[in-house]
Length: 556
Figure (cartoon, rainbow, N blue to C red):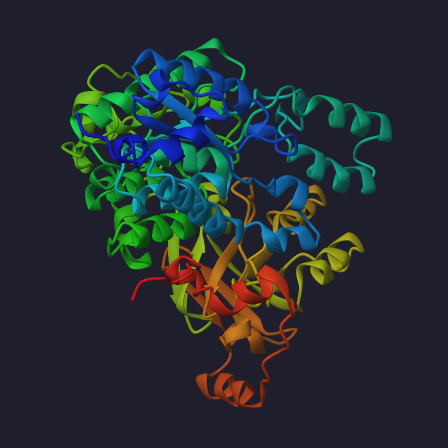
C-alpha cells in the first residue's frame, strides 16, 4: 500500500519532520503508519457539536485499530440558532467557504493520507463536503447526531424553534410566562443537531445519500451508544478506503449528487440544500443547476414526512428506517451503482433496509405527494429563480395573492411583525438580504416564527432574497435571484403592490407591467455595502448569486 505521507518521514531528508512530530510525543511506530486527519469541529458554542470530542475519541480508536495514526485538527463551527435575528447571521453562510478552505489547506499542507470529517450543523456539513470534493484523498464523514425531542408543546414534541414560536404566543397572551419559562428548560433535552428536519439534519442525510457516511449513521441520535460505535467503525473504514485506493472524488460524483438531490426531495429537506448541493457540485466539477434540481424534485415522490411538515422528529425518522429505508424505496429512481465509503454501491448498501413505521415513511405507491419536497419558481419577480418548500406549506397556501409590505432588512421586518403591523392578506417582502446585499444571505427564521406565533402563518406570505431555516412553515419563497442588491426586480417592489405566489405553476409574479418594472429600475440606485472591512466586505464582493449556490468562484 502506498501512502503519500511516507515521503515526509524518509530518513535522512525527513528527519526534520520526524523531529517535529517527535516533539509532540509521536514515536517511530506512529510515523511508520499512514497519517489520517481528523477534522473536528467540536466547540462549546454549538449543541450539534458539543459531543464531537467524544466521537473523535472513538474515530481515533478505529483508526488505530486499523493500523494508522490519527492526527486531529480543529475546524470552526458557528451556530445558526445563536446567530438568529442579529448581525451574527451575516457571518453564518460565509463560514462554509472558510471551512472548505481550512480543511483543504490542512490536508494538503501536511500531506495527510486521508481525512475523517466530524460535523453536524448547517454550514459545517456542506463546507466539509466541499473540501472532500476538492481533495484527492480518501475521506469519510461522521455525524454528531440529532438531539432528542423535547417536552410536549402546541400539540407536538417541542424542538428549539418552539421557544421562538412560544415568544409570539406569550406576547399574544396565548401562554403564560411560567409556561414559557418551562418551555425554555425542556425544549432541548440533550446536545445534538436540532431534532427537526432543518438544514443541519437535511445535510447530514444528504451526506449519507452522497455515499460519504456509513449507511444508517446520519440520523443516529447524539446520545446513543450506536453513535459511538458508528464513529469507531468510520475510523476503521477510512483505512479500508486507503487500502482500496477509493478517493473522495470517486464517491462525490454526478451520480451521487443526483442521488442526494432525489433523497432531499423524498424527505422534504431544507431549501438551503439547493445552495449547498450547488456548491458541492461546483467543487466536484459537476454541472448541477437549479433547473436540474427542479426536474429531479418534480419526478421524486415525497415519501418521508417529519417536522416541520409533521409531528415526527428526526430520531423518530431514524427509528422508522432512516435514510437507508427511503433510499431502498426510491432505488428505481437512483443511480444504484454509485460508489460509497463502504466500498460498495448504494444498491448493495440498502439491500436489507426496511420501513419500520409507515406513518413516517411511505412507499412509492403511496407517497405523501407525487412531486418532491422543494420547488423552483420563476416569474417577473424572480427572472432567474426563487425557491420554496411545498412539503412544509399547507396545500391551501400553495397559491396566495396579497399586498406587499416592503422592508429593506430583516430587523425592520421583525420590528413590524412584533408591533402587529402585519395583517391578514399581506405579503411581507424582505430584501437586501441576499449573498451580496446581506451580505451572507441571512435566514428569515424569526419573521416566519413570529407570524406563526401570531396565528398568521396561514393568512400571510413572506418572500425574500435571503433564505429560510429548514424548520420554517407557512407560505414562503426565498433565494430570489437576481437579488435586490444586484438590481433584481425585488428592489423596486412598492408597498401595496399585488404579488402572486403560485407553487403548482412554479410562478412568482408582481402584478405590475414590465414597462413599470423597467421604469422603476431606471431610477433605482445601488445601496452602499453594509460592511466596509473584514471578511464580510470581501465576501460581498466575491459571492455569486443564490441560483449559483452563493459560491465563491475560484477556478480559472
